[in-house]
Image (cartoon, rainbow over all chains, first blue to last red; front, side, top):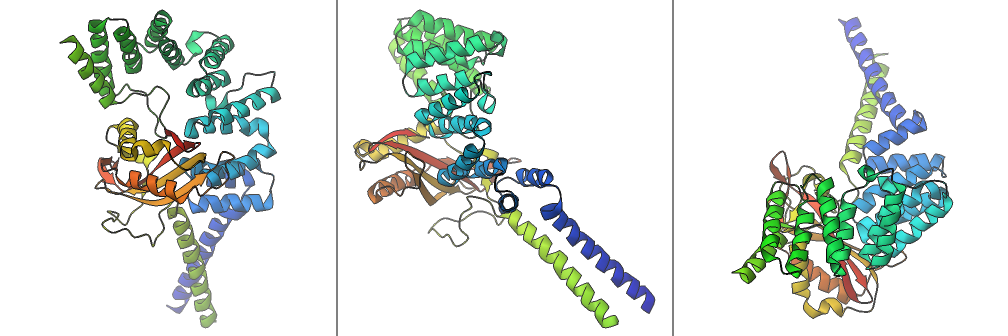
Length: 273
Length: 166
C-alpha cells in the first residue's frame, strides 16, 4: 500500500511538473515565430499583449509584434495606443506597414489626408509594384479617400489608374463603379452616373441595392419618378434579403440603411400620388 | 522521505495551478474592458460571462449609423457646429447589456497628430450627453441569445465642428 501510494504521488508530481513545463515552454521557450502565432491567435487578450511584450523585450526590432499588438486597440477605439504601437512598426519597416496604416486611417477614422500621405509614401518606396494595402488596390483606396474628402477629380483619376493597373474588369471591385456613379451623380452628369451604376449592377449579378438606390436618385432628378420607384422597390427587396454592403467594424462608403430606403420610397410616393 | 514527497507534490501542484489560473485570467481580460469597479446607477451587465466586442456579435443601433447620426445631431442641434475650436477624434466606448441598455465607461481622444488629447470639457460633456441620449440599442447575439458587448462611437471634429460620426 505504501509503495503504491508513493508511486501515485510521484506520478502526480511528474504530471504537474510536466504540465507546468509544457505551459512555460509554450509561452516563453518555443521558437519566436510560434510564440508570435500563439499571441496572434488570442488577439486582444492580456495574454496576447504580454506575449508580444516578452517577444519585444528579447527583440525590440521585431516590427510584426508591434503591428499585431496595435490591432485590438484600434479595433476597440483606443486610437492613441493603437497608432503609437503601429507607428513603431511603420518606423521599422515602412514598406510592410505603411499600407495598413494608410488603410486604417481611411477606414476607421476617415483621415483621408493621412491615408493619402501614407499611400503616396508607400508608392514612392515601391515604384516597381502596384501595392495592395490590406488587400485593396492602392489606387482604389486612394480614390475612396479622395472621394470622401470631396476631391472628385482626384478620385476619378485614381479610379482610372485602378482600372489600368488591374488585369481586366473581372479583377475590379464592382463597387468602384458605384463610387464613380455617385461622383457623377453629385456632379449632375446623369448619363455617366447611370452608366456606372449599370456596370456596378452587371458585375454584381443585379444584386446591388446600392446601385439601384443611387440610380433611382438620378432618375428622380431627371423626372423619371415611376422608373425610380421600381428601382427603389428592388433596392428594398434586395436589402431585406441581406444584399446590402456592410462591414462588421465600420461603415463603408456609400452604405445605405433600411430607413433611408423606406423614407426615399415614401417621399417619392408622395410626389407621384 | 515521505515528508519531502508530500512537499514536492504540494509545490508541483501549486505551480501547475498558479500557471493555469494565470493563463486563464490573462485570456479572460481583454484590451478595452470595462473597469471591474465601474458602476452606473440603473445599469448592470446581464451575466458574469465574457463581454463580447460588437464586431463579433453584431451589436448595433436600430436603423444603423443613419438613425444614430440623426439622433445625435438632433440632440446637439446647432451646438454640433459651435464646439470649442479643436480638431481630432473623440471616442466614447460603451457597454451594451443583453437588454439593450447602454453605459459609457471610457472617453479617449486624439488630435490630428494622433497624440492623446483630452478635448475641452465642454465638448466632452456635450457629446457625452448626446451619446447617453441614445436609447435604441440592439444587443449583440451569440447563437441566437442576446449577450453583453462593447461598442464605440467616434466623433471626427474639425475646427470645432463635428465633421463625421463614425
